[in-house]
Image: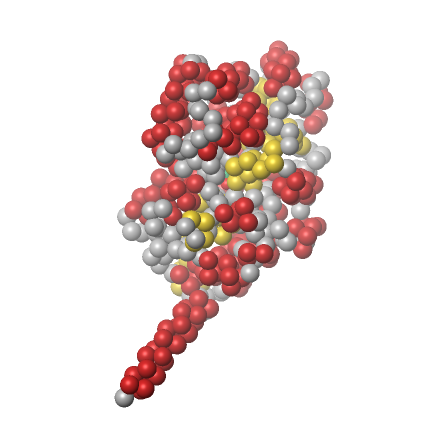
Length: 425
Ligand code: GAL
């Protein structure tokens, strides 16, 4: 009797394990909702990935749900309402680092994907530092589809020639060029809506503090009210004076700001390399000829990185289809379908070499830099500070833009760091 009972329990356990494996490998069907901010001009790379998914899983109907607005500024509010309302999408876009961990993982809203990393052998192909930014207390919570570089200085080489200027490598050189351009009625540096000013602030901070100082700011080694940080705000003010912040910036998306560069109304645009995707994929311009790039002045040797990832929310309605989506995102095929169109490089270290011909001059260059430069995480794009900080920092910037008080902004920033539990507080 006892032996029968043990056998019976053993069979049940085995069935449980087999059932789990079957669920993971079952052919997905039904509806899969992918939620992101890659709408309109930002859409082609995601659409190509969905097409690839459809060819592998024809029985799934993919809903490409988007909320327009660069950097996810509008998307995040909608996502929050849905997640807190118990209505999660099957999978959603989220930045590696604090945006993922400090918002969703610590709130127990995401499923641990360590088993998927094991099954797919992803420990060998994603850099460990990146996996660390997706991990919390022994679990891994997202699959990275790319690496983007933030804070690149974009320009049109022919225009610089016409205006008689070269690419500035220090902030002082930039200020001199700024005066030359303004005297010709050209906007030296074009800004778009509010988040693009935060994106610029990140680069000014990196330039003034250097990589060690910038990192120290987010980990508690440098006080937001230190003299170094006052110098950051002072420099930020001087750079802002070279922009269209008081003209039309607030009404421009990042694409529209880039259009002003292309039209020759502005000389430089400080933005992530989604600009390369827009210029090459949407406007069909040639990297290295029609448009070019450089480090933001004074940031030589540093690479500001961020990564777009997707995860599996707790209670995702169609788990089997979502897991198949994540498997595809993490594959060489998926990464090589998405990244050449997006203007980003694969997060997998073995993908570019599998098909180098897919990657243009800019992407080849940046893949090389990613492997060799000093990496620093982007604040604007979620790596080093949590979502609460990013939201509130917007107001710090507003205070500064209106008051131009560096000490006032520094004090306001410290308050926001404390409230959000960021900057090492
Ligand atoms: C970033 C995102 C990029 C790109 C950009 C502009 O936050 O990581 O993939 O979409 O915003 O919207």
